[in-house]
Image (tube, rainbow, N blue to C red; front, top):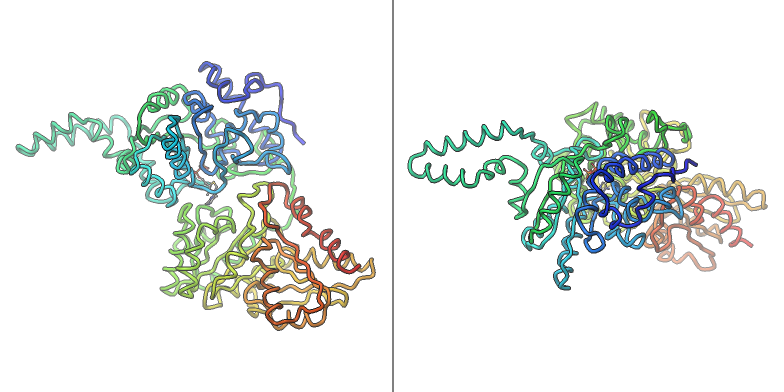
Length: 632
Ligand SMILES: Cc1ncc(C[n+]2csc(CCOP(=O)(O)OP(=O)(O)O)c2C)c(N)n1
């Protein structure tokens, strides 16, 4: 384990925001350097969100210097950029535990620290949350500031605009800092992004201003008045052509764009706007990965990164299995299927690399869409495509698809449209923790009429399920885990599966484990290891959560007295409860011993996937333990 250097001078003396406030500008420059070193050392040793955090070091310092964070509330959007915030709020000594089991979280979270005012991990929540805090402040008769910091990527979400819209209408005192680095994880997309990034040079603006004034002056009578108006409000011409016009339409006072690496300038601006009793938006331009060359030149790779050698930025060690990830199998299979079916369209919500759709983008750019961080829009947009005979593949991580629940129900399933959902990161994701686990997808999908829900046991089955989904007329969802499979050979022309039919992985006579997805092979291993205890355990892979393989499950319930149901999903409303509902309704459980393993009714914290699966008893050892308890 690489330890974070503790000999840092200024940083080791910072315990709370007030300590930063007391520093001079020169000291803040030194502190920025120390923060960067510590963040790079920590992430190099254990992985994490590097480029976003490096990009806001000066911005964080300026906020801590200009505002009074003992009273004022600072709300980070997504929270993946808050490492400097963590280090400046008394967590220097815990920083080496970042994202590890029992250690501090990779995101701000309520309860971890008094200066984390809002828990986060999903994007675009900061403006709404900050507005709620501003209203609460006013109701309580307090007068502190509330500051939301949101990235240009996160600003693409409808939720952010819902917040802006309300904030402008209410007119309450609050500050929104737009951290504009022109990047989401990949290059930011959309008309808004193009609008924000229009480069306005001073000579260009001056020429524009005098041209407009000249033009207005040539219009007789009214023209003179208009020209006078334009002169009096000289800035209005400028604001007409800069991002200010957008935010001013939302009744925000717009300031910017300003250099997000010039601490002194930012402090000055923040100190001035603190006195305004209305919503203000400060547009700050930053460089993602600032101060670390490898991250500046490849901010997408260093957005969230594994262990690397700090001197070079190269991956430190090969920690994987050498097998391709589920993500890459999904990506290559999607490309192969799309080569044979021109109606397949790929949709990602700001995550072409993360979802494996990069290859589709390269091969079929006209059928590829990155909608930005807009999961709700992605689903309804896909529904629209499906009404016209296309087969959209909506590739969104399980946790982020939670945002689009109503769109899945109302726009897709209710109309029985041919939209296919591919949910990467189904189950426990590991170090990103509670905000990112795909713990609920079986539950939030399986009760919606018309949808087919499946989970593959390995890479080959993933490809088969994809083929099944595209061949099926109606909505389908395939959820698969983070990481690699078992090395199963993937066919270039995967066969379709029979919908609602499972497979007996192994027969037995003492008990049966009924499971699917990532838990199938650990269940087979458990059964093999139990042979040493003289137990003969069957394993059944249902493949489908919906429709369940009813006939096969009834046969198993008739044959086995001991039944263990295992899933990597919330037990509440998940796979096991679906099986139990069916078996109870069929009245076949009399005299049967049944147990369920899965995610209990609580949020699971961060840790490695291995640690978390062991903690919940859904790994091989846990299944063995439970079965031994049931059978003895
Ligand atoms: C609802 C939701 N969808 C997707 C993500 C994954 N995600 C994390 S950060 C990020 C990009 C954010 O871009 P921006 O707000 O500009 O911040 P930057 O990383 O550029 O600092 C994305 C897409 C998320 N956290 N939440």
